[in-house]
Length: 138
Image 1: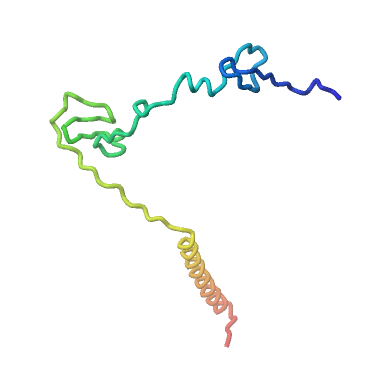
Image 2 (image 1 turned 60 degrees about the vertical axis):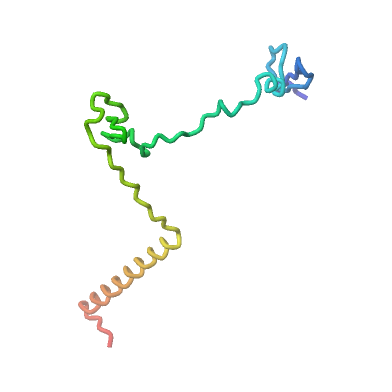
């Protein structure tokens, strides 16, 4: 059997707890397992996790050409303009339009209705062509 194409993986035991760690590099001499790393670093606490804090500004305000908040701060494309503070009225923001969701059934029935109307028009047109060509049915 030819063993030149087989790749061998090196395994070492953790220097702190003795657990076996697989797939380490060929040049590695010492290794620390993931459990020991977690124990030494510690778990993240609640204070390090940032939560969303609303600013009171509408979504997308920084994309507006000009936006004035309730305090009178003026923003041009998201950049504050302190010289213009209090000179303009607050921007009135319209609520977003509600989009009507169309499901597959409604779309299918609408397409079927359009298809039936086209078929009726084609039949009427063919009847007129037949009449003009002298193919009158009695």
